[in-house]
Length: 587
Image (cartoon, one colour):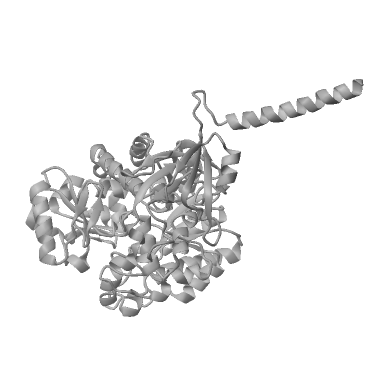
């Protein structure tokens, strides 16, 4: 009898304990004001981007900033009865877009200043109309300088390109104004033309650039290595707080409007480490709905710290010393530079250019090889700016030597931009375990013109051969390299899917990729480019609750309409952010 009574008490305690645990689980997400921290999303197309094929679930549940469930709605309702219900009303929900290559310093310089480029630029506060032709361009910059430039204050105009606008020089800008300092920044952001007043304001002399082959002093022209040498001397002007912060604010608007919840800058800083970081922190203290990841520039820090070893030693301190809640230095990652800009036709080409000019190296090759080997041997993930087939091949050749000398599995060296390469090179890239982060916009913006001038038909029509990589299972992400393309992931995907140019030419259609592969390139594979695929990029239990809500699924519409999908809202670490008026309010 005594034993039976004890057993009854024991069973009662077990049952009571189980019920108490269940009650505690149901209440664990309820705060002291009775509001749940769990949200259940259902009623639409929930696209997980998990796996190699399209996968949809009926419901997901988030708790604070983490995804805690993805599956059937009935199971979600049973397991999370207290969760706030959010009805998507037929809209599409995907992982928040990841932009693995943007430059806040470029955005902060470009956006609040004048933009006169070959094509229209859509900004948060309106559209800057494009202009083509020498006379039309000179009229536009003359009017802009006359109406807006001031004596004693640098005036920047971004967007010039010689193939659309004709030749430019210091004397031509002097003819417009001798007294107002003007810097006309090339479309590539790798070149600038200065007039006499600008040179005087900067306090620079020809002697400062003695021996630099990428400075044409008489023309006021600084390009590639000349541009890199000039930028630190312009740092105080480019980092003028009021204008710079205005530009960062506009950048934040573009990021949110385009469904991006994560951005990264490969190559920090551009000119001034402390100055750029302080201003970026000021913007991020507003807690905008995105994270910033920074990858240090081996090239700039080499110059700033006095050597490669000194640069790497400084990099080792960055994550612990400078990271914040929403600005993160990525450990053991570095950005290096191979050949010149594609927009300048300064990329290094194996067969050179049809007009006889030659490409440029951004880093002297002996220094470049030393940098690759040092960072490779020290376990770094290396990101390399490389555009032309010769520039890309040089990276592969240097890496091949290191792989033979010191084999490393999963090194994930990532080529950025990849303007032109061949199918044979894609095979070598796959065999060597190299990855790609490409800019599909090159095809849209440049293919028609470059087919006529510089590259010729065969190379010009085959820019950014993405399918050559995808069919070989090379991980590929898309980036804007803002401002080399609009900060619009859907536009990048649209270009890769359709391969249609600004002149409506349908080039190299064999290089088109599927909608799913394109969506991977702006979600999970973009996260992989940053070694963050375990944290973001797909809707998987345990990952961050970063989503974008679109008016339609990209998988149920004509692929030509993908760039026109509307971003209605983002969810960043569980917090909902409406982009524009919509009917998505949950019940």
